[in-house]
Length: 154
Image 1 (spheres, rainbow, N blue to C red):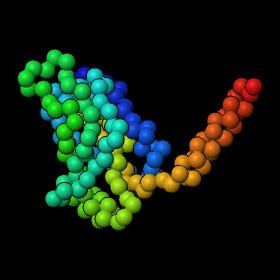
Image 2: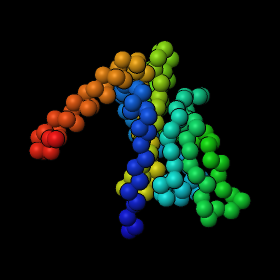
Image 3: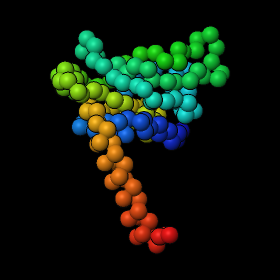
Image 4: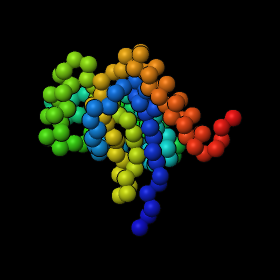
Protein backbone atom coordinates (compact mmCIF):
# COMPACT_ATOMS: atom_id res chain seq x y z
CA UNK A 1 0.00 0.00 0.00
CA UNK A 2 1.24 3.45 -0.93
CA UNK A 3 2.11 5.82 1.92
CA UNK A 4 0.09 9.05 1.91
CA UNK A 5 2.17 12.22 1.52
CA UNK A 6 2.55 14.44 4.56
CA UNK A 7 0.57 17.48 3.37
CA UNK A 8 -0.54 19.98 6.01
CA UNK A 9 -1.51 23.41 4.64
CA UNK A 10 -2.57 25.87 7.35
CA UNK A 11 -4.49 29.13 7.25
CA UNK A 12 -2.23 31.14 9.58
CA UNK A 13 -4.09 34.38 8.95
CA UNK A 14 -7.36 32.86 10.19
CA UNK A 15 -5.72 31.76 13.44
CA UNK A 16 -4.72 35.37 14.02
CA UNK A 17 -8.00 37.01 12.98
CA UNK A 18 -10.61 34.67 14.46
CA UNK A 19 -11.57 33.12 17.78
CA UNK A 20 -12.36 29.43 17.14
CA UNK A 21 -15.63 28.20 18.69
CA UNK A 22 -16.12 24.78 17.09
CA UNK A 23 -14.13 22.59 14.67
CA UNK A 24 -15.22 20.02 12.06
CA UNK A 25 -13.33 17.80 9.62
CA UNK A 26 -14.90 17.68 6.16
CA UNK A 27 -14.14 15.84 2.97
CA UNK A 28 -13.83 17.88 -0.19
CA UNK A 29 -15.07 17.15 -3.72
CA UNK A 30 -12.15 17.49 -6.15
CA UNK A 31 -11.33 16.67 -9.75
CA UNK A 32 -8.36 14.49 -10.74
CA UNK A 33 -5.92 17.31 -11.39
CA UNK A 34 -6.87 19.12 -8.16
CA UNK A 35 -5.99 16.21 -5.90
CA UNK A 36 -2.68 15.80 -7.72
CA UNK A 37 -1.82 19.47 -7.12
CA UNK A 38 -2.77 19.19 -3.44
CA UNK A 39 -0.58 16.10 -3.07
CA UNK A 40 2.26 18.19 -4.53
CA UNK A 41 1.57 20.79 -1.80
CA UNK A 42 0.46 23.49 -4.25
CA UNK A 43 -2.62 24.85 -2.50
CA UNK A 44 -3.47 27.76 -0.23
CA UNK A 45 -6.19 28.82 2.18
CA UNK A 46 -5.53 32.57 2.27
CA UNK A 47 -8.76 34.62 2.07
CA UNK A 48 -10.99 31.54 1.96
CA UNK A 49 -14.34 31.14 3.65
CA UNK A 50 -17.23 28.70 3.69
CA UNK A 51 -20.95 29.20 3.24
CA UNK A 52 -24.07 27.06 3.41
CA UNK A 53 -26.27 27.01 0.30
CA UNK A 54 -29.31 24.74 -0.18
CA UNK A 55 -28.23 22.31 2.55
CA UNK A 56 -24.66 22.02 1.23
CA UNK A 57 -21.44 23.57 2.54
CA UNK A 58 -19.14 25.19 -0.02
CA UNK A 59 -15.63 26.61 0.28
CA UNK A 60 -15.03 29.75 -1.74
CA UNK A 61 -11.77 31.23 -3.04
CA UNK A 62 -9.56 28.24 -2.15
CA UNK A 63 -6.39 28.25 -4.25
CA UNK A 64 -5.29 25.00 -5.89
CA UNK A 65 -2.56 25.53 -8.49
CA UNK A 66 -2.96 24.05 -11.94
CA UNK A 67 -1.39 20.63 -12.26
CA UNK A 68 1.89 20.82 -14.17
CA UNK A 69 1.22 17.73 -16.28
CA UNK A 70 -2.46 18.60 -16.81
CA UNK A 71 -3.81 18.98 -20.31
CA UNK A 72 -6.81 20.96 -21.52
CA UNK A 73 -8.75 19.10 -18.77
CA UNK A 74 -6.93 21.09 -16.07
CA UNK A 75 -9.10 22.67 -13.36
CA UNK A 76 -9.86 26.31 -12.54
CA UNK A 77 -7.51 27.68 -9.90
CA UNK A 78 -10.11 29.37 -7.64
CA UNK A 79 -13.48 27.68 -8.01
CA UNK A 80 -16.15 26.91 -5.41
CA UNK A 81 -15.67 23.42 -4.01
CA UNK A 82 -18.26 21.36 -2.17
CA UNK A 83 -17.49 20.08 1.33
CA UNK A 84 -18.77 16.75 2.62
CA UNK A 85 -20.37 16.81 6.08
CA UNK A 86 -23.30 14.94 7.55
CA UNK A 87 -26.75 16.57 7.71
CA UNK A 88 -26.66 17.23 11.45
CA UNK A 89 -23.37 19.13 11.15
CA UNK A 90 -24.62 21.13 8.15
CA UNK A 91 -27.84 22.07 9.99
CA UNK A 92 -25.83 23.17 13.04
CA UNK A 93 -23.46 25.29 10.93
CA UNK A 94 -26.38 26.83 9.02
CA UNK A 95 -28.17 27.85 12.23
CA UNK A 96 -25.00 29.24 13.81
CA UNK A 97 -23.94 31.29 10.80
CA UNK A 98 -27.30 33.05 10.77
CA UNK A 99 -26.11 34.68 14.02
CA UNK A 100 -24.34 37.97 13.25
CA UNK A 101 -20.58 37.86 13.74
CA UNK A 102 -20.11 34.11 13.20
CA UNK A 103 -18.54 32.61 10.09
CA UNK A 104 -17.10 29.33 8.85
CA UNK A 105 -13.39 29.45 8.07
CA UNK A 106 -11.15 26.68 6.64
CA UNK A 107 -8.22 26.30 9.03
CA UNK A 108 -6.24 23.39 7.57
CA UNK A 109 -6.05 21.30 4.40
CA UNK A 110 -4.47 17.88 4.75
CA UNK A 111 -4.30 14.38 3.30
CA UNK A 112 -5.59 11.66 5.66
CA UNK A 113 -4.12 8.18 6.10
CA UNK A 114 -6.32 6.84 3.26
CA UNK A 115 -4.98 9.41 0.79
CA UNK A 116 -8.11 11.58 0.75
CA UNK A 117 -8.04 15.37 0.94
CA UNK A 118 -9.74 16.76 4.05
CA UNK A 119 -10.43 20.29 5.23
CA UNK A 120 -10.61 21.25 8.89
CA UNK A 121 -13.23 24.00 9.15
CA UNK A 122 -14.06 26.06 12.21
CA UNK A 123 -17.02 28.09 13.34
CA UNK A 124 -15.37 31.39 14.26
CA UNK A 125 -16.03 34.83 15.66
CA UNK A 126 -13.87 37.72 14.47
CA UNK A 127 -11.41 39.15 16.98
CA UNK A 128 -11.30 42.84 17.84
CA UNK A 129 -8.01 44.70 17.50
CA UNK A 130 -7.33 44.58 21.23
CA UNK A 131 -7.96 40.83 21.27
CA UNK A 132 -5.31 40.38 18.56
CA UNK A 133 -2.81 42.43 20.56
CA UNK A 134 -3.53 40.43 23.72
CA UNK A 135 -3.04 37.17 21.82
CA UNK A 136 0.31 38.34 20.45
CA UNK A 137 1.38 39.47 23.92
CA UNK A 138 0.46 36.09 25.45
CA UNK A 139 2.25 34.26 22.65
CA UNK A 140 5.41 36.35 23.14
CA UNK A 141 5.28 35.75 26.90
CA UNK A 142 4.95 32.00 26.40
CA UNK A 143 7.88 32.03 23.96
CA UNK A 144 10.00 33.87 26.57
CA UNK A 145 9.06 31.34 29.28
CA UNK A 146 9.97 28.44 26.98
CA UNK A 147 13.29 30.10 26.15
CA UNK A 148 14.15 30.48 29.85
CA UNK A 149 13.14 26.88 30.64
CA UNK A 150 15.44 25.56 27.94
CA UNK A 151 18.29 27.66 29.28
CA UNK A 152 18.60 29.85 26.21
CA UNK A 153 18.08 33.15 28.01
CA UNK A 154 20.13 35.97 26.56
